[in-house]
Length: 173
View 1: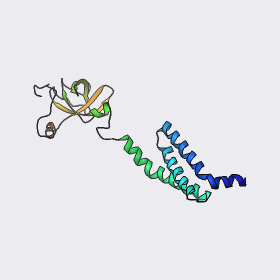
View 2: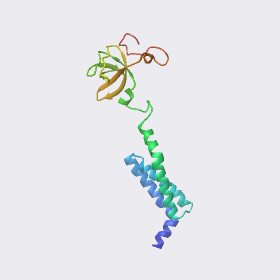
View 3: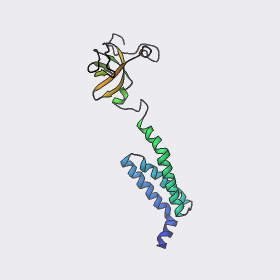
View 4: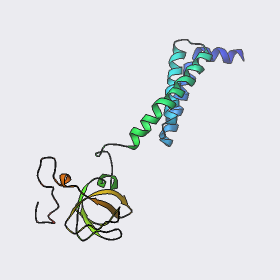
């Protein structure tokens, strides 16, 4: 038993390196950032071992750093990963907030809009009836249906002050 303890004292950094690599490998399978935080704790413990810290202090360093990473860093990192900028969003998520033009009257159950160059079935979220040719904003996508609401008068102009492109529906481009 004394030989094992002496080996751990002399080569404890190897144990922490193996744990670091093992946690990192598990993280690549789970993608939950939990094992990534544990791997940072193992890296800190490895640094403590290289600096000749006693074994109990290495374990304390691992536990404290891993706990701090899980409690402080992981929630912020997960939030950042799950919500991105408009450029980072994909597919349907990119359409939310876009402007569309009603092709036929849109009500609480039926209607169609021109959205991103495609014709979509649409409905209003509040049950109001929107006439054909009106510019609307997409508030969410439910299956293959765009849920829309009317744009306010100030929202019908683009950033440069020119009327929004409605895809040629109203004769303008």
